[in-house]
Image 1: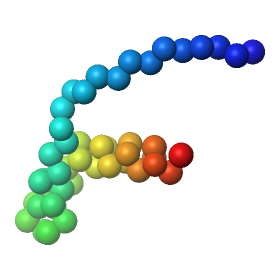
Image 2: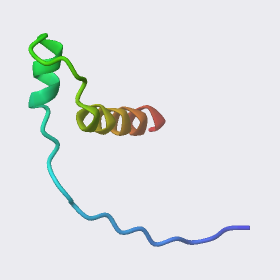
Image 3: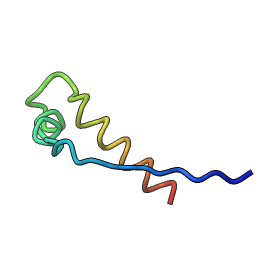
Length: 49
C-alpha cells in the first residue's frame, strides 16, 4: 500500500569543523562528536543515493 508523506526541513546551524581539524592535527585530545555526527549523516546520505 502506498502512502504519501510531507517532510519539512529547516536549517538549524552550520557545523563547525574547526575542532575536527584541530583533533586530526593532534592539537585536541577529544574527538569532536558534533562534527563527527554531521559527517556521518552526510556520508550515509551520499552512499544511499
